[in-house]
Amino acid sequence: MASTLSARLNLAWRLVATGLAFTVFGVCGVLFSVVVFPLAWLWPHRASRQRTVTFVIHWFFRTLVRALQWLGVMRLDVQGAEELRARRPAIVVANHPTYLDVMVLLALTPSACCVVKNAHWGNPCFWGIVRAAEYISNADPTELVEASARQLAAGYTMIIFPEGTRSPAKDRLHPFSRGFAHMALNVGVPIVPVLMDCDPPAFTKTMRWYDVPPRAFCMKIAVLPPISVAQYVPDGSPPALAARALTTGVETHITDHLLQHGFFEARN
Image (cartoon, rainbow, N blue to C red):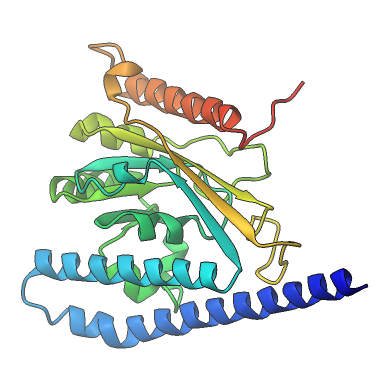
């Protein structure tokens, strides 16, 4: 009886703490959009403005992740984080099981730029952030590749979820889009595969924020060694075939490692 009551109180506490965290995130996002964003555009130097905004976003998400851990809502298990802290141009390609994936990766990566859904450019909690940080919309594939090349040339790490949205189920991925492959082929930077898992599942495609799991969820992150274009693309391949081969190769690479790390279950 006592253990049941304790479990219910713990669940209620995590529900309240989760709601509080989302409220803080939403309020801070709106304040950033209506206060910080207009002030940022008064900054005379574009490059230093973007660096400053990126730094603020990184530390905000680091603080939010730590707060969620302190509140007992989540745990974080990261392997290979030094690769994300390298502060060199690279393309981080990750699977996308939960709503919190972007927050966690930005908290782990000091100098990052993201490819984000076009819908976020009109979201009151995000529109100022994505503009001030010069994140890249996925609306136009050609502009996505060109803008990403500029960010990589400026020294940023590009974070992209090639599924385009959260994964459809625990052990399934959406087919990868080829945007990241065109980026890598055009700029020649390494691809850093990142595996992500949430146990028990939380904030998935089919869950609302208030669908709190029975215990604190653990975000598991495994950063794999960088891979080069040459591993999957033969010399002299036409651009379209090269992008297709690279996309297929990286998708297979990530899927295989999700199985090896136990993030996916093998199917009979």
